[in-house]
Structures are given as structure tokens and as C-alpha cells.
Image (cartoon, rainbow, N blue to C red; front, top):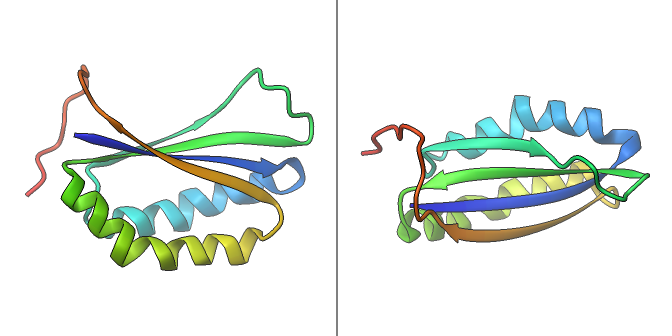
Length: 110
């Protein structure tokens, strides 16, 4: 299992709109690709940025094959939509981590 982590620093004046859009549109679109098992959205607390909020969205994926397929087939358009909507108001970076151990029940993915 891999964890595809997207960290986004979003301007404070639009972060509430961004969170709503992520929950109502972007994350459902990502999940509808069928490449991910589950997701988790988190907000960083106690950071030093007075003019922005920092969030992570973590998507659990079964294997590298599915992640690469997502990155090649689906991510460019989804990232374009995000960039178009919030241009100049955010910074994002992506990391991939191998899940070594966990205590969550995993849904079976076919």
C-alpha cells in the first residue's frame, strides 16, 4: 500500500471556499477514478503562516501501478482544474509514502 500525499498552502482569504470545493468537487472527482481506496483530509495546526492555512489530502492506493495510472491518465486534468480555480492563491507539493503498518480496516479493492 502507498499513501499519495498532497500538501497545499492556501491563502487565508479563500481557504474556506477551497475546503468546500475540495470536499464537494475535487476529492470526489479523484475518488471516482477508481484508483484509490480511501482518503483523509487534514489541516495543519500550530504553523507559522499568518496569511495562509496548510492542508494535506492523503489518498491510499493499493500499488504503484494504480498510482502511476492516476498520475498519467487523471491527475493532469484534475490539477489543471485546481490551478485554474485558485491560480496565484496556493502552493502545492506531492509525496508518496509506503505504508509499513497501520491499524485501520482496509476496504477490499478489486
